[in-house]
Image (cartoon, rainbow, N blue to C red; front, side):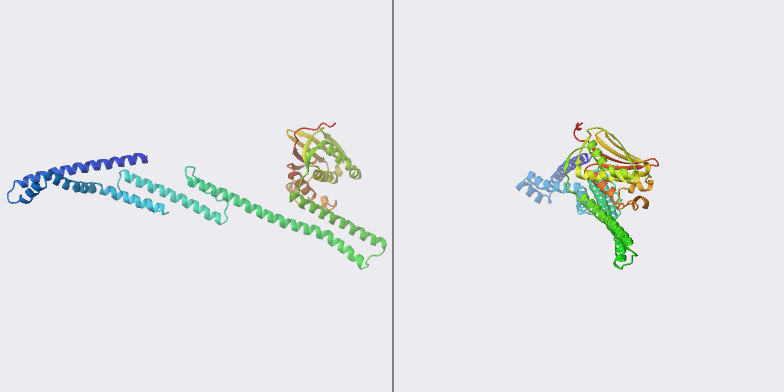
Length: 411
């Protein structure tokens, strides 16, 4: 469209050039006729006759015609030059960033349409810049859910899209920073509470012993035994906390291929004393030779936690079902106990640090509230996934790892 307009403008300029030449020729002819008329009038023809006789009529016509042509051309294109100057001034204002500037042309020709197009373009540009500016102000106020409209047919649309992406990333970074700060505060609060409770008890019993406020040696040994048990719990909490911190700080892994069936069988054998003490039986359903690639040392700690958790809270059910099987490209291990269920409201938080479902499920059994958090960290740091589901019939903890390149066949 713009090319057509400029072609029309060039055509008009050519027409005006030809018209100026034609008018000039016509005027020169008229002047020539006037000169002939003047030469025929006595007494007033002397100066003109002298010019014609000494200079010649043709040079005179040239001298008169050339300036006359320029005068005609100027008069014919004066409106055109004026409009071009207005458009040039408008473009210069827009280039300087004054997008509210309007080119005032009232003509309906090509230059008028060109000026109208420039005004329309700057108006749209101004409105879009105002939208982007408004969005930036909202983002600066912390309203990161503000979305700047993205116009697909504009390069400014790419700018708006980049700003929206930056806003989302900034919002995510701020949320992560706040979450990290909250996590740190929660960790400090949890550690402080869980360290203070046994420590206060230990100090209380030691104070009784220090002040000889016990009746006999039997009571003394009783107080010492309680203080010792509290100290053991305190040590376990510190060990668990150290282990959790070490895992989440990116400890180096010793990756190797592990036969999960043999691994779980060995875990069951090592747990026999605890199972006999709790009166729990284990039934294993396993595929032979199912392998994964992981750090065996860390994996032992994770599955020991799941096993002890199943024994501790599944004792009332009398048995534990363990399944090791292949599902697609994953190796799946499930620990199912039939004890008291985990309340539905607690399931989303069961792997959180220091989270205890209820007093009877942790304090009576001496849990630190870090066991499942450590297990989750060990599983996830090695590319696995852990989940839990619980209802009135059973509670199942499930882990999933990618299978090794090929299964082991070790018999």
